[in-house]
Every structure is written in structure tokens, then in C-alpha cells.
Length: 414
Image (cartoon, rainbow, N blue to C red; front, top):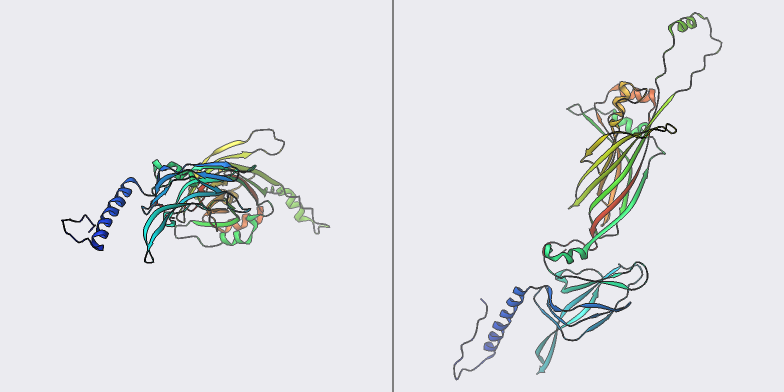
């Protein structure tokens, strides 16, 4: 039950219990009115303005913190603002409720006043911190001083609280380059060993060979989404099939009793073709889970000096990577090909996958070579005979979306 009122009649002896009941009735009614008006927000005044490059002035105002305490200030307050080297480039002007006790009688304070203090915080406070943020101060990247941005305090993050969301929202961008020209993954023991493994019950076999991995620091407390545009290039080089000798020449060679010196073997003829994918993809990081997709426009590039434009081979969508290059787009009929080489190259993909990074606010890009199909003995023979080589490279421009401070839930907590 909550205190209501007391019944008074002439001659009633007023005791401490009566006064505490009457005061409790008044305070509970006021508290309910504060809750109805809205806790955790400014109701009047408390504007923040910069007076120079090192000070802000907070004007008088009225607010209630998340617990419903009254924060009242009747005089302007001036704060000194300084950003230490290496510190975050943002600070928050906050209000804190204070109680001032006075009227000491017999060693006990009998009068309580509602007051407030104005403080600077390094990070946006949560409601349980008993601080009410009213403005964000952002250090200018060039020159001195700072920008003042109004913050709408509140417990809910909804359409009507856009300023609170904008206060936390951050966007960062950059470029990542991954290069594998120094290695030939098709000749690696790991790739050959993976191809030799037995296939599954459905006859399909998946090979995943890690090519490169890089963590990217976004300079945010939390990275929730990633957009990426990339150019993925792969150059394939393999030996052409040597033409068989003429039967008559073979017969004449067989009739000779001895060959003084074996004929010189002709130098192998190498066939080279380059494929490039121009890609766009998105990734979303949510509670340790990653959802991503990538759309690739694949072109086969002309050889140097040919003077013809790239040939478009098609568009390909994947939900397993944020960028990818399917060599199947061009490996169906490369020059000098045969069925064995087509089976090998036609099932290869270079894939770039996104994932949350090892530290908060970062993301990881993992490049892998994938192959799927039914392994056969011919594949190893093709690799031995044709010695295919693969060189790859990726240039990726990324844009990350996240929060400057850890994301808060619907009640304003982290």
C-alpha cells in the first residue's frame, strides 16, 4: 500500500508517525507525477554552449534522472574541457542528482535539499550510472576546440529518439589489399591432400584451403554491419597438351639400332588466362552470428597487347562470402583445355568471407580457395601433367557501421 492522507480532528496529538505518513503521501504522489512526465530526460533548460575552445557553459534547467530524482539548477555552470593525448575524441556533459543536508538538530540533519552537479564523462553513461547525458563534445580533427552536439536523453531508443541513436552511430571506411602472387595454392600439399580424401555419401566433396586472413580495426566499440566493394583477380597458367608425333617418324626411330643422343624435348607451351570479378557485398554481425552475401560480375581479361575489351561472362550471387570469383565462369572452355583440366578448374572459387574480429570493434576478412565435386584419380594426374598455377589478388574498399560506445538495449543499458 502507498500512503494516502491522515484524518485530523481537534485535539489530535500529532506524532512522528503522522508527519512521516503525510510526507510519504506527498512524496509518493510527486514521484508518480515525475514518472508520468518521463524520467531520464530534461524537461526545461540545461542548454550547453561553448564559450571558447576550452570551456562550455550549462544553463539552468530542470530534469529527472532514470530513478526519478529531481535535478534542478538555478545558476549557469561553466566547465573546463580538455582532451588528453590518446584519449577518445568525445566527452559527454552529464547531470548528477545530489542531496544537500542542512538544519542540524541534536546532531542530525533535518532539512534535505535537491541539488545537482555537472560533470564530464569519457563515455556515454547508462541509466544505472546515475548520470544524465545532455550533450556530446567532439574534438575537431583539425585545429583546436570541439563541436557541441545536443543529446536527447531517454531510456528508449525509438523513432522519436533519433538524436540518441545518432550520438552512438559511427561510420568508418578503408581499403584492404590481399595478395597471393608469391604462392601457387594448386601445387600445395594441403590442396593435393584434400583432393585425395574420400567424398561424402552423396558423392560431393568440399575442399577449403585458407589463402590469407586479416583483422581490420574500425576504431569503434562495436561493428554491426559491413559493406564491401572488391576487385578479385585470378590468373591461371598451365601447360598445353603436346601434339603426338607422326606414326612414320616413330617407326623410323624404332628401326635405328642406337640413338647417338636423345632428341631435345620441346619446351612446354604455357597457356595463360586472367579472370576478374567486380563485386559488391554486405555482412551483418549480430550476437556472434554473421549473415553475408556477395554479387560478382565476372569478366575474362584480354592478354597484354591484344587490344580488345574485357569479355563479360555473367553475374553470380553467393550467400557464403562477401566477395567471390567463380572460375567456373571461364573454365568451361579455356584454350587448350581437356575434360580433366575443366573438372579441376571449373569447380574452383576464390572467396572472401567476413566475420567479427578478435577484438571488439574489428572485423576479419578471410580469403580461401574452395573446390567442390567428386575426386578422381584423374585430378592428380592432371595436376602432374599440366602443372596448373594460380595467382590471385584482392583489393577491397569497405565501409563499416557501428557504435562509438557499446550498444544499449531497449531500456538504455549496455
